[in-house]
Amino acid sequence: MSHQLVYYSRNTVPDGDRAMLTNLREIVSASQRNNSHNGITGFLIFDKTWFVQILEGDRSKVTETYNRIARDTRHATATIMSVRDVEGRLFPNWTMGGAMRTPEMQEVYLQHGIGSEMNPATLKSVQVVALALDLQAFEQAKRQGQRLAS
Ligand SMILES: Cc1cc2nc3c(=O)[nH]c(=O)nc-3n(C[C@H](O)[C@H](O)[C@H](O)COP(=O)(O)O)c2cc1C
Image: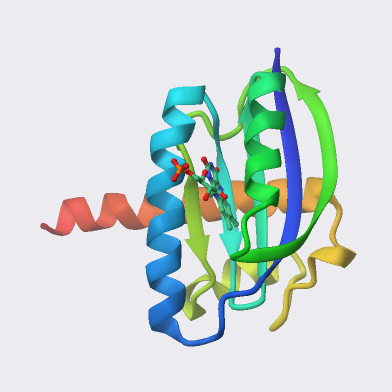
C-alpha cells in the first residue's frame, strides 16, 4: 500500500525564463536527491503561475516531504487537493518527473479540457493525475525519439 498526495501552489518566482529555469533545476536536483533517499516518486506539472505536484510513497515520508516543500518560499499558498492510499504507484520511475508547460504540449492539455490558462483551483485531483500520466507518456515518447534519432 502506498500513499499519494496532490497539491497545487502559486509560483512566486518572478517571471523571466532564466530565474525560473535556475530555480527549477535546483528544485529538481534537490527532489531527486531527497526523494530517492526517502523512496518518494511523483510528478511535477508547472507553468509560469502554478505548480501542481503528485507525491507518492510511505505515508510518513510523503507527509514529511510535503511539509518541507510547503515551507519553500519559491511558491506560496500550497493547497492540498487530495490525500489517499493507493494500491500501486502511478509514477514509479520518477524520483520527480516534471513537465514545464510548453507549446508542444498544448494538445495534451487540450485533451484534458485545459485551454490557454490552467487554473488548478477548478481542477479535481483525478484530472491532475490523468493529465500527469499523459504528460509522463509524452515526455517518455520524446526521450525515446531523441534516443532513436541520436
Ligand atoms: C514546487 C516545488 C516542488 C518541490 N518538490 C520537492 C520534492 O519532491 N522533494 C524534495 O525533497 N524537495 C522538493 N522541493 C524543494 C524543497 O522545498 C526543499 O527546498 C528541499 O527539499 C531542500 O532540500 P535540501 O535540504 O536537501 O537542500 C520542492 C520545491 C518546490 C518549490
